[in-house]
Length: 181
Image (cartoon, rainbow, N blue to C red; front, side, top):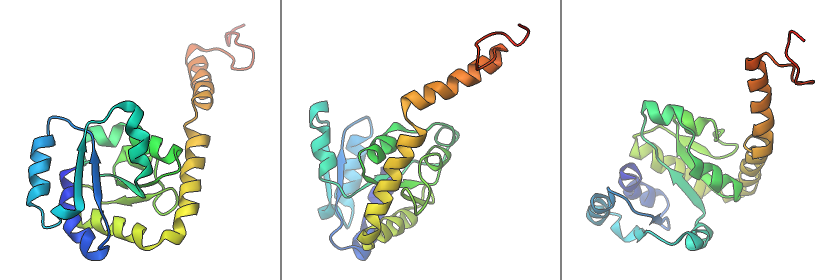
């Protein structure tokens, strides 16, 4: 989130009406609040803090674009995050750093936007490009939602895993019988 806060002055230069809403908390909250307060774009940054689970949808409804600026690391290259997936399932626009876990979810320019990780300027530019072209939003929202439905549906995932596990066990995926039977 420090990259996103650093991107805000650049984003506000390009999109003067842009606002950053940070919902949640954690061990870095105090440092992030201080960073935001010191930012030239501090007037455009709002912290809400932790909210009860039943109020999360209310904050999603306030947003146009959800930004996910993960830093580049082995973990972010290997682990697919759930929050962008949840956002896409709700028909929200997603702008995320170009790390492995995000590349699994976001096809740049189709289901969302990707930007160079750890780069506030790239983050600001990607967000500004999205905000400057609202005519692309309906298609991008629909493509994101479709991606989730087609590739991340639990029933479909379970059937894919069943085939993989049966193969590993030497079972015929059609009959469930062992290959030797």
